Amino acid sequence: MTGVGNMTVLTAEPVTVDEVTEEPGRFRLPGEDETEALQAWRGRVVTCPVGAELGIELGCRPPRPWVLDPGADPVTAAAGWAGWGSPVTVLGLGRDAARYEWNQALLDTVIQFRRQAAHCAAQALIAVNELAVNYCGLRENLANEIAVAMRITDGEAELSVGDAWRLTDELTGTLAALNTGRISWDVASAVLTATDTTAAATAALVEARILPDIHRLTKRSVLRRCTRWVAQYDAAGFAARKKKAAHDRGMSRRLGADGMASLNMYGPVEDIAALWQAEGVRWSV
Image (spheres, rainbow, N blue to C red):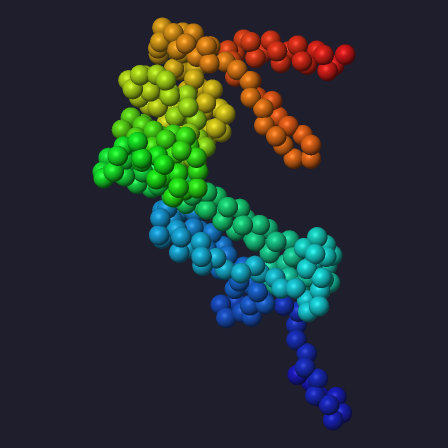
């Protein structure tokens, strides 16, 4: 502090970044607490087990670490990110850092909600199987009662009962992976589809082989591997089932939007492959 006439002027030496960050009681930037809260939440939510605890954590996600300027257009703000003050004011460690942390938090939210959805699907199937075992009415009325409750067709309800029984009785490892959120329902259904017509012993062998890597695979990859292994472990049965299934080949059509429709064909792989190749040749001419 120096005196100039009747005025007092405050002077100070420049403060380096290292001196600021290493000072225990340093001034915290606006929004820095919010950004760090997001980082802490992400650390908790990715290690949280599925169920009630995860549901609570998902409902307690901190807000995004920036605010819209008063009067800013939300659409322009979402698309622009033109600068620090127009139209978005970013708090905390800077625009890019705050945006990155928020994007990662949203990705974690999607992943954890999918884990929670898988857990809920497993619990629903366990309940369906329990209902089927302890149903107090006529067995033929079970599918209809489930269909009415779930707003699905009787055929879909019957399939749901069959899937619930197979997962709780035959494919218990797949059910456990689904219940813990390790796999999605789509992946679990691929295992069910691939082993649907094989013996329980073969299904158990296929499941044991796919489980170690199942959480890293897509639905299509799981279906392909399991189908290949079913044919490998039960070659005779696979050939017999394929011959029987060939009698069920056929075509179906479905009305789409905007004057369009879809055509579905079901049949042996070699027939579908030949038709696909022929159609490709026709369209390329």
